[in-house]
Length: 393
Image (cartoon, rainbow, N blue to C red; front, side, top):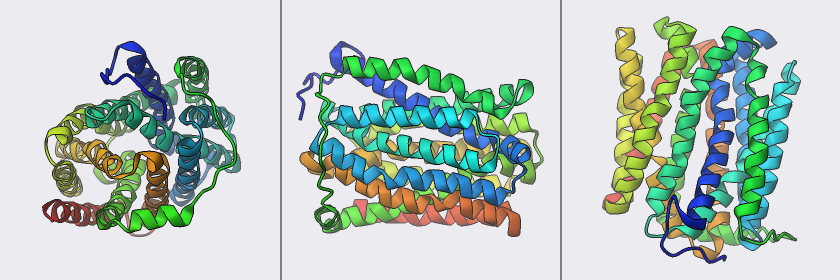
């Protein structure tokens, strides 16, 4: 493992510069992902597809992302975090360029799959890199790093409204590929870890045995499956839900989608810092309770302002969970296998969670959005109960 500055500086020195570049890369990859839900109504209309087909494409994207998490994590453990990050950003750039040229459903689906593979490789290696860099301030580092996805959500909603007004939805993606290129070069220059690569022994049996032997990790895996299933379904179709159920305009729906991430800017760093001073599972369980309440309020909202307030409440809970729970996982994983162990966990729970958009799209076309969102609320309730029970035991 490469030795980093033991002062754990977040914004200065070599460690701080590397942290900022890794966070900027995550921001750009997240922005591509966050652009898709607010642009989905325009994509559905332009490609002449149903909500079910759109949901299946998003599910395919998420499954492709989940499938590479474990093997890429093993490469990061056995050889080099830097090698994995350089390869995955390169693949992401290719996927984004393909999105910019998608004129048919098949091309759109193919672009999402390529981008999903690139983006999926990023998380295990980058989380392991941050864990190498930070121990005492791990929760805070995760909270600030993950805040990049919140900024991406805000920017994504604004860009979606602008793009739909002046151009086609495809115009949103090519500039992102052009920004990622210099960031990738900067990362390769700043990182001092050698670019090692070679044959990898996946060790699926050893990894699964190590994870499943820990009862706490088994329960957290269940929680994450429920959380990602609900979160992916709701975030993918939230703009369309607001348009269909609460009869808001496209601009208002996009603004509400951005609110998810405006609140996340506050929730993620706050929950990260709290998880460094309070039991991490208490913080994560409380976040899920708040998310469940927000969904209930969103479904029952009698007027649009209440629905928008419900989105804000939901966002604080939904976006506040990951820093503390990710830090909890990294605390329990052995240093020598943390990227692979995290990748294995993420492969499982992201694969399960990938069904969320397909389920939500199918439910929307059959029984409506309200029953689908209520079932997602049930996922949050069960997950919160498991975490609060686990934290006490």
